Length: 362
Image (tube, rainbow, N blue to C red; front, side, top):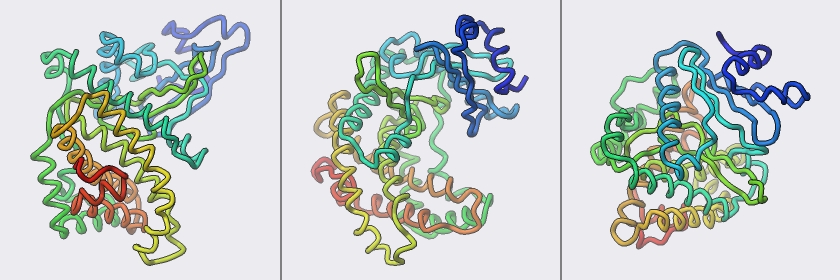
């Protein structure tokens, strides 16, 4: 049974996950919110809204990721502080490949939030750092080793091996692969990152602005939760941290006016005002995270160095995603590759000029 806006209510009644009183008094509404999956937002009485996710096709890979996300929600219920960082778990229906979680009232993801404001508030950076730091600290301290080794597949990010695959999904991807293979710094760095990957804790696996949601709680305080746990795994916590930093830089690059000049140095210099506006939030993110994780000294420097390497890898991953259906590489993709090279070539300078971090911390 594939869910639609018209049959969803019957499904929810069958699963006993809907408030019948909301139906009776007219406070029930369904909005389709599908992207990669078949998604629905269900509005009921206050704090009883639902978010329903169903895979679009019976695909073994998609089914496995949805099942892993559902198991992640179940596992998190055993750890109160971890569950508090996620939406409320409601139901998992393996027969119909559906996951239902609580809907946060008047929430927006950080991509929507930053596009709407065209500002990058420091308190949001702090919220991000504290939330991600608490997640990593909680799971590293409380999750027993036996569970970590049996539950998670322990996969290494595929982008590290991209240059070794003959990936020909589009002409733009073919061109991207050739650039990475021909650039010694890029392909040797990806090999190095694959070899140096650490299995240090439980990670979200796909941290980015899209998967971080801000909302106001009952006390009118701004709060943050992390969503879309399909790629949760046991891996390198610096990958999650780098994913957030990558979102800032990816937004900066997306806003560059490529039509106005062909001079890349001039383009970067002209866009530095936005980058400077982002840096206080990125510094706040790092300060809150390192404080929550109790990182200092050499541990702090090693972690940040790995995270910056992973920002560069995520840049290449985003370049691949932008190129998937394209006949040629766009100027945005070429800039993503350029910034990736810059970070890998000189992480100390990149730490200071791109992120506003002190050089001695790398």
